Length: 277
Ligand code: ATR
Image 1 (tube, protein in one colour):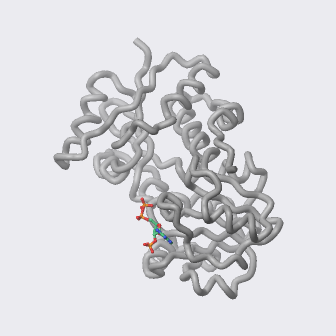
Image 2 (image 1 turned 30 degrees about the vertical axis):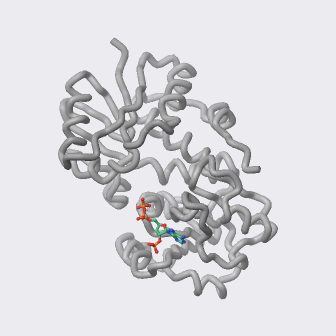
């Protein structure tokens, strides 16, 4: 029987993961299946039961999406450092009955920015908007890319501050509110990791944060020219991107972790790209 993998979430109808992993498996010649599972939201322990049933049926690994990333974290036997910092898990591997947990969202994002968009972060000024789960997962990989400065801005500054203190990365990493961004000048990279775009809203970011030669990155995927990207474009930013590359790159990281072979991502990203306008 082929090795079995799945993505679990609720709702799950929108997921691109089976398509992405199907294309990876084809390209690398791996004998595996990958399906989408709609996980139970209630009762509280039903999620873990569903995962255990998948393992009992021979499952080798899973991707985890909303709203189960915290429950996946809780049920894991082993967690990587970045999963531990994120407090959330987006990929699991099952070995000898043990659940090993990872979070590839942040590394996928860094890889998309540095490799696909060709914008190395080393020595650059980087601004991240938001302080939710997406940012928690991204901080360690971002710091690993050695920016000169990494600023996390959030409406509730205390939330950003708490994150920064948790990482304790010295002077490189700082937290602030949106009002303070006014006096900080342009950044080389601005990443919108808030959930504002999901509801068509704009985080209260001043246009002065955008540099003409910089990059504006919207974590959301397939939402077109969001208010954030529109603001960046109007401010003269040349490089604007949404999260399609991150989506494919985090999948490639999980695939390589599971199968020991790294798939090509360019053709898959091109296939999934929805034009911004
Ligand atoms: P998750 O953990 O799933 O990423 P979350 O914890 O709800 O989700 O985080 C969402 C992030 O988007 C938060 O940083 C939130 O800001 P606050 O913590 O200040 O609430 C941010 N966010 C949501 N809507 C926003 C908006 N309209 N403008 C600015 N930030 C917004």
